[in-house]
Image (cartoon, rainbow over all chains, first blue to last red; front, side):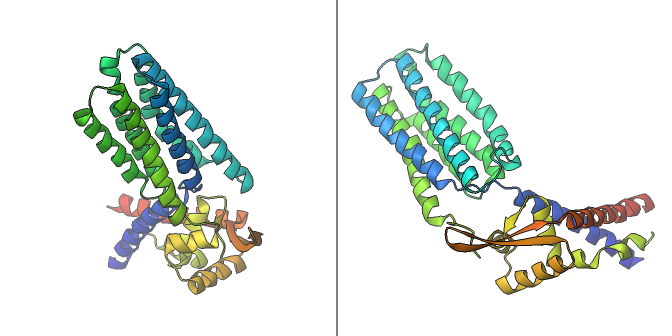
Length: 205
Length: 103
């Protein structure tokens, strides 16, 4: 009787282990270093350009950075697609679908905040980077459940940085432009560099 | 409780080292040897041995190729392996279900 009970416990545990392993197997595996690096460099360049161009109205600030975000999304899409083609893999795979679904809600809120920012006066627009950072951090954290370890921590970094910026920022659009460059561009570039040296290059046995 | 389902469990899959390999492959179209080894924290020799057993049972297929001039070994479940794995899960669920009914 006791052995039958043990069999049952063992069967439940095995089912749990199988489930965990199947979930782990379905993790998003594309190399993220090129994506992060490209987004980082774009962000840094865009911040420099924004300061040089003297973007100093709320609408211009929101519009400019939403355009940069759209450009970065296109960059990421093309790089991931290129990787999938090179590896002869499905682009719209179940892990890619799950990651996109996880990113969706927070990025959508970021878009809404940006659209609201188009009508904002400069007295308020300097707060947009903080809002975007928190929402972007939430998006990264959600996607982190389907991505390699470390991604959730990256998301938390943005959330903390956003909260810090809300408290510490000076009401100026020049510093807001630099914040976008530093927090989005700099953080992505640094993470891209870290991933470049830690991600596996090829899966040779 | 009927001990029959437990006795029907496929011994090839049932082994401690092989069940995780089957579980990982069941959720992905294919995985490289390196991915399997890193995820399961197995040694090369141990993993090779289990892969060979599963391959001989017809449960997984192994493909050897080259990527960027480096050898690449990938494993995938065969239709027979997928079927056997599904049956294995069914039997585990039966064991758990029977235990709940007997409580």
